Length: 66
Image 1 (cartoon, helix red, strand yellow):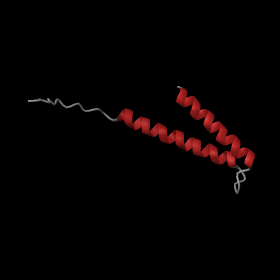
Image 2: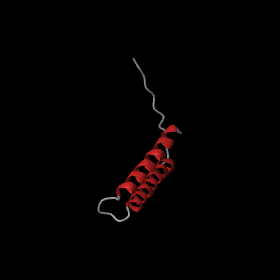
Image 3: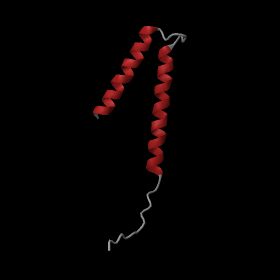
Image 4: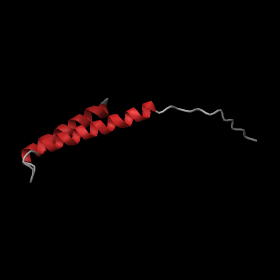
């Protein structure tokens, strides 16, 4: 929970710092940051969905120490 909160605070700081600077060549730096955040959320959702939908195959294996 703490990690998620720190991530959100960090994203907010990045967006605010870009908005104050003016974004260099970009006329809308906040839009660019927002698109990156949305893309990251979609990628994370895809990764979690893939892991949850993959079946776990357990093989009966015995290890013997002699």
